[in-house]
Length: 217
Image 1 (cartoon, rainbow, N blue to C red):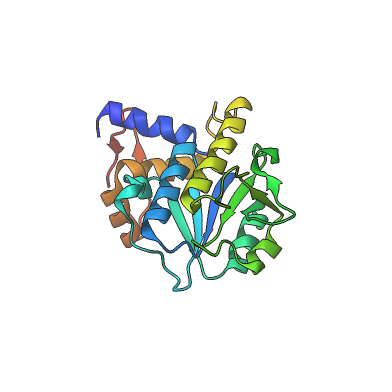
Image 2 (image 1 turned 45 degrees about the vertical axis):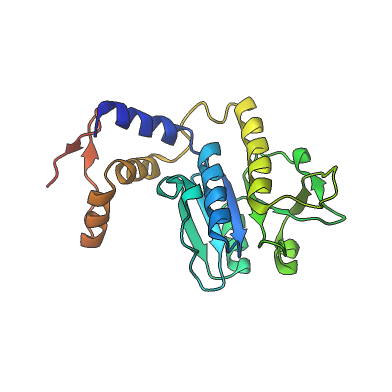
């Protein structure tokens, strides 16, 4: 761990947004899942969420560009539990869905805690997911096609959220709680050591100002 690498990790972690996330409902194509995670990393999402019928997620694709290392992915067994989990944390859930009640995606205030719900390729969000959402949003289309690819739609909407949050100063200071920040920093800096310590049920050691492990024990 070089001091430069350590500073880079901290700079990225300082801008993570614990109250902005994405929920993927049965997004089953690996390149789409990977592209969404890459966008999530780019806009500062700390943790993404997914619902998959097998209880797992597809294999990661090169499109992710390694972003799966930096964005935690929580897998939920079904959509009701996933939405309930997000709402219990105080997040409003916005479903990207072509419907009569859908708002232009730019009308939403993303400076408030928000989760973007994206549906499966071709079919979109399920009727149940749309019912559970607080509101629906749409990217206006001026051509012959009705909608964007799911990963492209995610990028368009999440970068609007980033734009609003930058203007509001939400990237100007660390927003993770101290314990989450400390734990995540160690896992990012020393992934192999962190995995071994978790298997052993041992706590992570402290890091000094240069990112070196203090008292390995």
